Length: 488
Image (cartoon, rainbow, N blue to C red; front, side, top):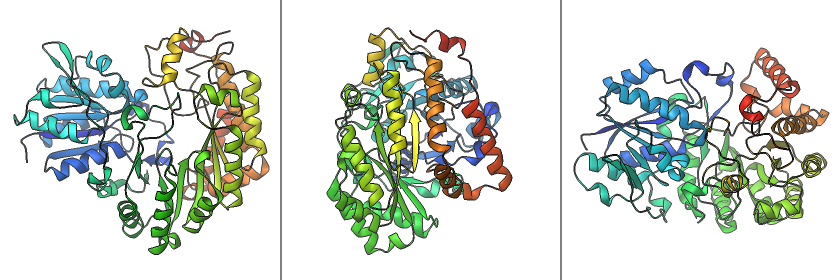
């Protein structure tokens, strides 16, 4: 074991005093990035602590107490673009305590914007892309065991100059990584929406997806036997009855899914839990869906995006509207609950095309729907396209993956449209989809894929419903910053 001890932090979007009062009702996704880092550090016998600010606020006095009491010498934060300001706020607090504490950023945003991040005086190192090996080698460097120039995938400063070491090749065999340490999150298991990550990378080429900035476009999946171990732990140790896969395209490898389903049934896990996943329509067929249903799968989320084949080509989705509609109807016929994810406001999208997307959601057998607005995350082709259109982003506060009607205005606006129009259109889409008798009954009975109403009291259900209705009807005026990005 080395002499250094690192505190790994999964940051929140906001400072502790800005936490929403309803936050405790919303299940939090398991921080897979931080978890796999911790598992790798454990295997290499390195000392660490973890803190998930999505579960409990990291007040300044709490952070200082952890650093002092746990003898922390390194602080590492994994963050996406919307979390960058809170991450820098935490690093400021750390450096104000002691300049000797080493600070590291990793995750999606630092991986594609290392130069920008390192201009902050409170940041020392950026771990780019997959971080397990790079972070451990950096910890060894702190102990004087290796040279910093030999650490691939690392960016840092020497005498004020930013240095980028060569990229680290992606891990081909992700079975070589230690098992995910679910036990580290056992203390707050009632707050987590615990999911399994069974693959890394996505074979798609969508212009709006930021995942490839870390995981790459090469699809790498864990063996079925490896995944079964996770399922076993979640069912038999944690008593989970609903298990989701967080993979972007769970069914990208058909044979892998068939094999996994067979093992689920062989172990009788299909009798003890229900399974859910995300995928693409062009990877599905009736035989596969029926096999998944027999293995306990009860819900599937399909990225539909748009009702326009013209826009499908622009966003490089690599499939057609007809393919997606066929997949939705097959999944419904197979007895699966189907959620469609849609995005309103792609480049050159007209109002008529936006309305057609909403109509497509209404006339097909979707049990749930999510209507998003395009977010031009750094590292995506959409980000570069926005820049070519003359839109330059110096502020990432609105780069929020939460829905636009949750006090957020559109970040990317198609030419000829306005930010306020897109936000209102998104609210209208949700209102028309969910405020139908069948959908309201479905919502009250089972909640949403991310929200289990069974854990709510009657008062909490009424309170949440009231707030949702207010969000739908509140015509929030554009802020000064969003008015500046309105076009047309």
